[in-house]
Image (cartoon, rainbow, N blue to C red; front, side, top):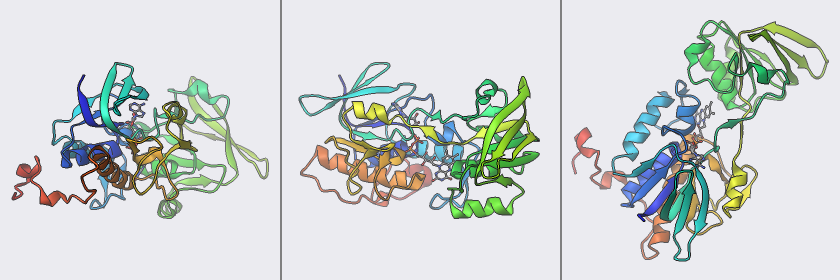
Length: 337
Ligand SMILES: Cc1cc2nc3c(=O)[nH]c(=O)nc-3n(C[C@H](O)[C@H](O)[C@H](O)COP(=O)(O)OP(=O)(O)OC[C@H]3O[C@@H](n4cnc5c(N)ncnc54)[C@H](O)[C@@H]3O)c2cc1C
């Protein structure tokens, strides 16, 4: 039985930064990721999208950011377990934890939970006919934007994801229409960009009623809930961005307190209700929570620092500045030690 200091659950951007920080802190660390690739939502949901709100990067493709995060995290020989889903966590009598996955057991002295939105189960379109068009024009992710080139696309939803997709598809698609039942919930800047674009918008009070087609999507009908007016428009693809169903019920079975769709943490320490289990990223719930990559990274640094203090209470939780150290990657960039 090999015992790790820190086991990170989830290899998205928060988990990868937790791994980097664990390396910086000299911890023996491991990551367990359910998918076949590291990168979380960035790789699984929007690898082709530009990200505009990373410190130091005016614009960076999600897939390129993942490549950088992986390179940064894997400077140390951390153990990486892919295609392995955590099903249970059990505290052991000696204060360590057993993490049970679909492939076996892992043993660790502390845990940093970075499982994000969980198993990427998209919230489905309520329109009864939509299900029969899944994979034939109805999509819940847009991994490859070029697949929408020249198409008339109807996007359903009004959050950041829906509007980001609209802006990314606008230059490629023949036409983009957003249908949304309430006010947009996206960043004001994103909303302004959509308003200045050629994207057609039907919101608020508009809902998708039906998807039509013979084998593949050919049209949709939406309704204006206020006036009752129904409109049918021809289209080639429907992209629904209605959020994701959370796995939070599973976390409760692990004995971790949850609130809404997140894990309750003390925002000063990122400690969950279970001593020795910390959390960072989209999975956490605290009053100031922002579901952003930069915020997840900050939380991961705090979580790892606190985990180290938990493992060695005689040590201080102090800031480690990366330029104070010679990192494994330093040679590549010719940095002086
Ligand atoms: C379309 C879209 C556009 C976005 N654009 C931006 C943007 O421009 N800027 C920005 O800051 N944020 C953006 N976001 C949000 C950003 O992607 C998230 O805040 C970020 O991915 C959260 O990272 P995370 O590591 O906490 O979680 P995730 O990225 O969700 O990663 C969690 C990982 O944990 C794994 N996992 C879950 N459960 C288990 C389990 N039981 N066992 C093992 N592994 C598990 C998952 O497979 C996943 O890989 C966007 C999101 C979407 C959907």
